[in-house]
Image (cartoon, rainbow, N blue to C red; front, side, top):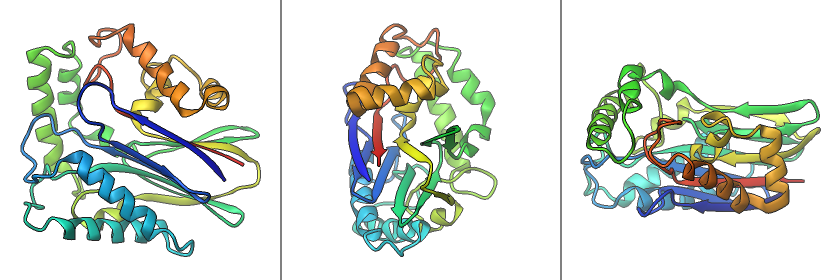
Length: 268
């Protein structure tokens, strides 16, 4: 498996996405926005995704380790790195997770929250994702989307939305992300696909996939054509060009003008 990767911040703040690729593994993490709220942790989201990513790749070095078990191990190890922080805080640094692994003639996948894996197959495209987060406090999400980005009203609505999200995060009635509790790994969506017939795959944070899913400015076929022609960097550049036509979120309401983006493009 040949893996090309890139990640870029969506603005001037530090990048909260993380991506890695090996000959058998592609991993994308998308750190959750704090909206300026307290997290109980002095390290921050970029620190969290970097350490989680490193421990995750190490945990999955053994191809026989189940993806969920590897994620659970990585979560435990990262939590052990900062016991002085309040890891019970509902806003503790957290991330979505998307993993694709080649194991003999199969492709194993794990998705936790809304960073998708897209498989290009002979008959079309298969999107593997976890959209449980979309079912949480939709009325507050709609309130955020009423306002243009960078306005005070937008920022205040976003804080209310994130505060409400945190109350359902990693609970049976809410949605699950990688945080301080290894139990989240057991709630990831996992599966295997025969590698035969899979031409290529893209592992994406939603900052990259939104070109199709949110903006509707490309098809998956066009995304894969872009990846083949210019690689992950070119795909992220395409997202930025679209966002530049709507910097305040009037056409495409969103949480920020530009979201951090990460891409791992896998070919055989």
